Length: 405
Image (tube, rainbow, N blue to C red):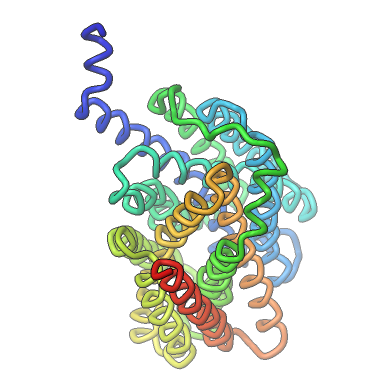
């Protein structure tokens, strides 16, 4: 064994390479997180420019989410044998193309198609990225590693979405999508430079074997927990801008700043959630969901009051993403135990579950806005999250019995 091989395999070198790879993943995930949620701050701008309703504009978020939900598991299964670094860079190219088409859109229909194309790259990137992040660190640090990768979408919520909202209101919403396409270029370059080629690859398996994930009742329950627990917040969050303007009474110029504060809460929650989920994801998730349900129901009563409303919105943001590392770690752990040849597909299906939750939440929010009003979106979202609490308790009981038996 030569000295170069020794240095490459030295623990300090491996840790450094792992950290750089995580940073590259986070950079690309930042662009992906920005493009997913930036329409939240631009719903009014887009609806006015394209002469469509707020509810129809909201489909740019739920439609994107469904693109992720469809694309993530299917493309992950079909690309199982590809080198993961090559795949990640290719996905960022698709991301750049999708956002460029969005920036060039002159109709709602073309914009919706562009969002759907972009969503295909999103789902598989996050699912593969999460499994790579988990493989780069020791067993007891895996949820924290996933949380580090998810600092990309988190920071996007802190800075990308408010900045994109500001750019969209100043220069038009198309300028925002040009900016997001540029983020994709930066992400692709970062992945090419910082991510090593010798990543741990998933063991080869047939497509039929990978679909065994769908036969495991505990994994299916975990996916349902993800959809309900994460998606419940989006009943209210999708329509946060009109809620702030029409219910709380803030002017449009305040919205970017409030989204910035919301994003800081998300960043704080992501860090807390990663550390809290390292040892016992299920127990941590149960308490996170209970708190989020209480906060969402409370927002219904707090929203008409500016100071109290902002405090509750801050708490909503903190708990909204706090569950993400734990949910992803839960699924990876279950997959490694029950379907080890299909961990990537399980991860992708969980990303799909996140986005099914977003789609259901934002679509449900639109129905509520059109029927009984904006003010009712938070408490109904809280009921969705309570559904996740019940399923989490049930899965905890099943895992406890399995451990004893």
